[in-house]
Length: 240
Ligand code: ADP
Ligand code: CDP
Image 1 (cartoon, protein in one colour):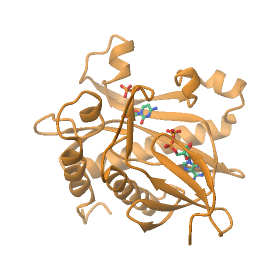
Image 2: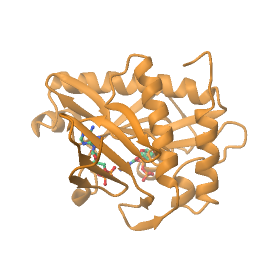
Image 3: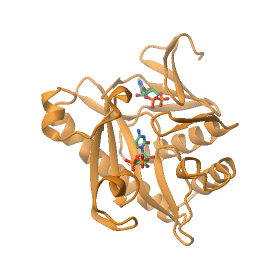
């Protein structure tokens, strides 16, 4: 299979059509951005680490009953996926207060959120991804009530599965963002799940193991991404 036509060039990934029906190739590029694209760099191999971790998570989730777009890897930074009609929602699940939750609301960083919070933002860079509520999502017809219910259920299931997998590796899943798409009446998990879209803390040291290292210049981003990718993808027999 080969990339045919560039369909979308996003901030960190490019999406190509292929010669196979309903099948796309996502290229994980080495671009990294933060603060609404205000901070940008190219970090050699970043795409490979994110693709490797995403593929690992999609396969693990798939084996555990979550419907995902993942098909296979063509090479370390090209992922073959099922084409979805993307739903423009950024679905964020939070287990511990951090990031914008702490900046915008009187939560103390590090507070356990039990049950986890689901926060849904509108995926629209020109509007700076404003937070939505169920009524706005339905009124804008971004998703139907049935889809929204399914999305929330799937997001919590992804959280449960990823939280258990990462905990076994000594990593706390603080929060993460996922995207969904539809095919007919079916909702699928799409896009990526990687160090760029999760907040991960080392359980013992509290050290950041994700894009916060880049955002706030906490250390050598690529050394940390490489170490985390190795740690996450180490086989854990009981869980997968
Ligand atoms: P962004 O700049 O929007 O964050 P990325 O650089 O992550 O985008 O580019 C990936 C693009 O591919 C996003 O627009 C995402 O919604 C889209 N996408 C992800 N998975 C699929 C899929 N299975 N089918 C169609 N589009 C997808
Ligand atoms: O990262 P920031 O503090 O600005 O935003 P957040 O709302 O605290 O982000 C919550 C989680 O979603 C973090 O793991 C982010 O990395 C992720 N996220 C993302 O991947 N893409 C976005 N556009 C927004 C958040």
